[in-house]
Image (tube, rainbow, N blue to C red; front, side, top):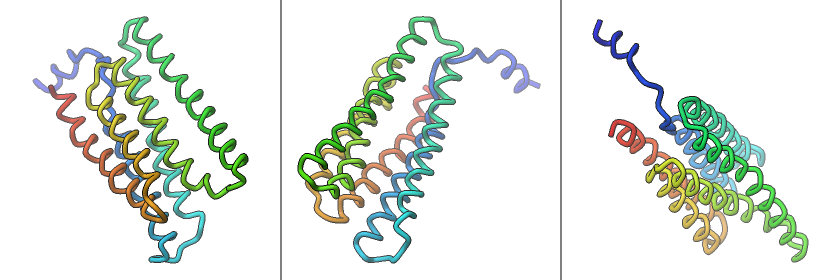
Length: 191
């Protein structure tokens, strides 16, 4: 009976619960980039489309879950907060449009299409990291801010890692960061 009373008096929160989204992104990083590592290193023979499919599945799930959580939190938010969320939301479009132009431009100008294999994963993670920093600042969410900082720095550092090891670093340090963030998100929400 008390549980029912507690549920009835729960006030809508403007906090964004990122646990499910973080787990979706962790899946994409660990299994997508992990499969790319295994495939490109020659350790496992697999269809070329499989690493991309695993990555895309996790990224799509994470994106849908993040958008759903954000929209749910915006229902109880002030008009100023909703406006800020919409502005940072458009950064996803502009950030990835700019990334597409940069990756295409660099690989075309230098006539090295294989650059896209490295620039897309690293660049995407840098863009995501920068947007997480902005979202964390707007929401007052240090965990989201710190995750963005970590992802951005890891992605930039991966450009120094040769060969298939590049994907291993993204899988372990990127995917691992999402798993740690999913665990810490529970504590953040409880505080």
